[in-house]
Image 1 (spheres, helix red, strand yellow):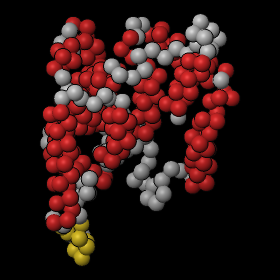
Image 2: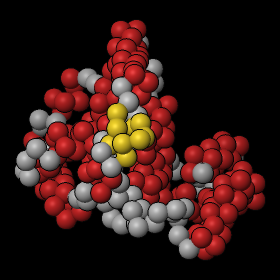
Image 3: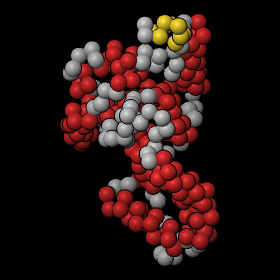
Image 4: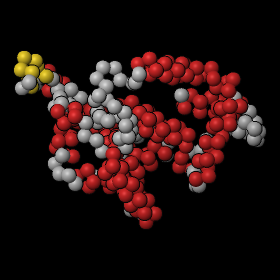
Length: 281
């Protein structure tokens, strides 16, 4: 919906005179922002222009609004967001989900986005100061808001089970030692995204990311797929064919292994000896 609003207001602005301050829509590139006041100005511009051009904006976002209203009606009717077992899907504050997603994004986007230059920028004094502050915040969020969902401790049919047991449960300190990695991962992902997107688009993406991931108590890679795809479509394709070849080879290898495990390596649980279990994403 944010993308549609931005696109609509941009088109309206293009059809007006650029010196008409009443309709001027300010949405700079992330990389061109020099001061926080520009962010405030851009947000105010979005709000004011949305109301001023509501007759143009509303028809374009009508289907989104219908979905929001329908979802609200469903919440009231159902008494919650979950169908079925609600006790294991209670919404809360799970901020480390953002760190898990950033790590997931860095790994799967690396063939297209990784470059040595942004890494070297992180060694600058200013970047180190920001990085230290961000790491301290990450440590606090990891300490206060890390959740071990019962499913991730017991359901061995998913990759996340093995990631959690082989990495995070190897030692109590691992989750804290990874905080600098989260900070570096997030910085590189933001840089790659900011170089090619406007401020309001990036803001909308981050808000949607927080709203969709933070309330979920369960770490599942499938929750990351849509944010990942949205991120990637805003990254220009690489000029080097080798990057695409490496990326496709990585994806194909993981999928082939997953399909092989699903089809040829079923297993049984002790408490359900008559049922075959199969490995899934």
